[in-house]
Image (cartoon, rainbow, N blue to C red; front, side, top):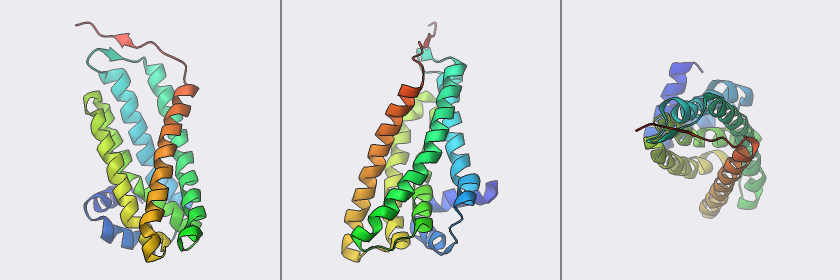
Length: 196
């Protein structure tokens, strides 16, 4: 996927998720390509937007040194790439409990593409005042999961909602743990106070 293909996929997932999940379900599961051409660039862009926001733009009163922002971005990128695979593993491991098809490739596609809205909304962190809107992206990613899971993992009809809730709970826990791990890996840094 080139940049325009990635952008088209992002837009179709956000604007017409049901149709796009049908297309994704039919595609081959090429995990390295999905990492390199889709998930990786979106994770990197989101992390760099946050780094620019906290170090260059800054909030109303504070901003952080560039070294801290870049370290934070590097940790976020590594954790983001790792957590996509962990989420796929969990999705696949839970599939048989909910009458679904065990297929790591489909599970990886579900993990990578369902996080699209969260990564795109992370771009708003370039302006710290808009950072809270990024939470809307995370919420929409849960909706993308809800729409995509039955199409890719094919659970029993009556078990699709509980399966989605279980995976959504795992996603939320992973986000909280990831934030804790990231903050624990970085040195404490005193923000630079802005002059009024």
